[in-house]
Image (tube, rainbow, N blue to C red):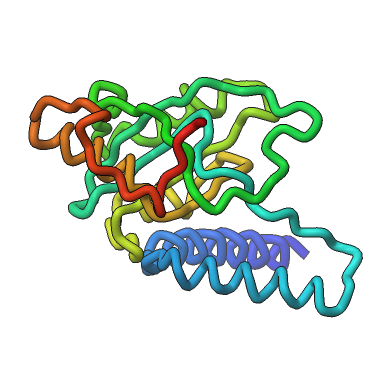
Amino acid sequence: MKKIVCLLIIVLVFSCHKKKNIEKNLPLIPYIISAEDRKLKEYTDSLNLYRAETIVLPRKGFYGESNLIIDKKGEIYYYQKRYIQIICKYGTENDTLPQFLDLQPKDLIKIPIESLEKIVYENVMKKPNNRRILIIASQNDTIKDKGFLKFYYNLKVPTYFIRRTTQEEDTVLHYKKTDKYYYSNEIKWDKSKIKFRD
């Protein structure tokens, strides 16, 4: 009996150890935004087609209280937007154009990849449960940076969205990186890609 128990313990120890090594060596598959959006749309359409009991609500708006931007080189920037409590019918329309935020270059904080998890923990995970939302925007359709993918595949944030950057984010990021003077009224905005308040 002792031999069987010892054999079981040895098998369990080696199988657990082997599993950990396999997990460490898993390849980090690039995240392709357009492909994931397409899969989500197909899934939503199939639910609607077969009148499933599960309801998938359309994503509202483009920004959250906590936002990450990944630039073309894989550098990461963080900015916060003022929290607006959603009540009644506020924000129920499915916006196809992002609102103009009047984002400023000083609002974008560059984050070293090594600090990303800690920044997200401090600025997202310490909020009340209904506000633990992270919006991730990328200038590239495919996210390949291994540091970011490691963070993504271990993401602890309960609600997150990954999308392409908006015209405003791209513009402000350009001014941040070139250290040029930015004044939003002097920008020739493409009004088919951004919505200004009336």
